[in-house]
Length: 365
Ligand code: M6R
Image (cartoon, rainbow, N blue to C red):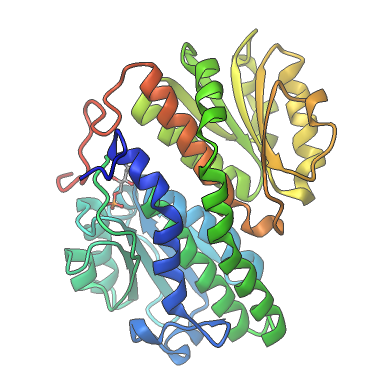
């Protein structure tokens, strides 16, 4: 059942290239994103002037990636809402102009389902991004884009996140074309970059040894910080959640520019900091944030692409990834974050597939 892996989580991490392929390739026709297999045509998407992503946990984190992508490529405003907050705040929605995207692996999360029902009651078009076929959210949404990750058994979501963000890339490119921010050549180039990701993820997953080594440096930590800017901040949130849920180490994700506004007081000698520096255009700013924490004694693990130079001068440990245009780097940096969490959990003797107090699907409030 675990396909030769010791845990479902590790199996599911390794299934990511296939999950990515199964989700993305049916939606690329003639080198461009196409949602015909989901019965969604361009006319269905053209009228929207705002996107509201509603979800919980990891699924919500995929919404933050979607926010950066859709806003950057298509200049379409996106807000991301925690489902349990959204459902009780009497949200402002516009039935003619808003698209509500509900993201859920299980399709059964109680708060997310309630948010869907609320949006539908207000007459807003609801698009579900769902992994489980025939689940409540899939049945009740106006349209569904299924992610084809296959069953996800481990409580910690891994491959489901990767396919959720893959769909966000497809939507962002599609919206960019529909709104006139990408011509066909540009969209083709982005789509082909997206397709190239699969082999890079597979390559990254071959190196489990270095992650075991990095995990050995994290296993006794009490507090851990994840820092990033732009898309790296969205990934920092996901990395931090993954680590805390399966290792029980307290961890926080911060937008690196926020450090000076409070959290830097928590950095003491030896505090591990996972610094995401995959966004080339923001690297200089990130490097200066890293220097700030280093000078307070932090032990810095830097995740960056393999063209970054002089990294040994600013970080204690450097995890280098293949260099792609920065917008695609989240698809590569997520696996290292998952592996760090996984191996740290193993070294701490935690029940990695079934962490304490957690259920795979939160079907009650
Ligand atoms: O099934 P859903 O995607 O709706 O679940 C949402 C969250 O409960 C889920 O992503 C949770 O945060 C994961 N355990 C995180 O790894």
